[in-house]
Image (cartoon, rainbow, N blue to C red):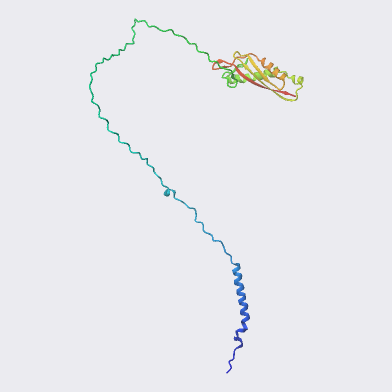
Length: 239
């Protein structure tokens, strides 16, 4: 009897299809294996570490150990004490009275008078003088007398200074500064006049003008007349 097969049940007809499916699956597995990504291992942050220092701290107490003190030996046995009678006489001190009798004359040593040297006060700058020198005609309080003195000295210099020197000396236009220093002495006179200027003639003129200031009432420091140092800057404008 011959066995008959159904031609549709023959698996050899599907061998090519199975091969293609196998190749597709193999390629898919290889592709997925290549494209797979790996990441570094990350350890989570454990957070700040807090140490309880108070629990871990240990205080070491050091106690000073005193060395053992050596035992003191017992005191030696005292020798035999003999009692000796005191035959020495003691002289008593007699204190004489210092009181004097009414009829007794008292001798007084010669008293020598010592003259105190007068304190010498040096010249005082105008800025710190207690009582400023008084310019003739000035009156008022200390502040008013000071302002009046400065004003009158400025007016005197403006009035007496020879302004024609600029043309005579051929000075270039501008402001020529002259610095003058002088002293109003204990008697109120002008002394020790010194000047510094860009030209010798201007220096001489400034000294001449300051020396022509009138006599003043001298300044005082601690109630005593003293010399007062005064500085006077002069601005000479040349046109």
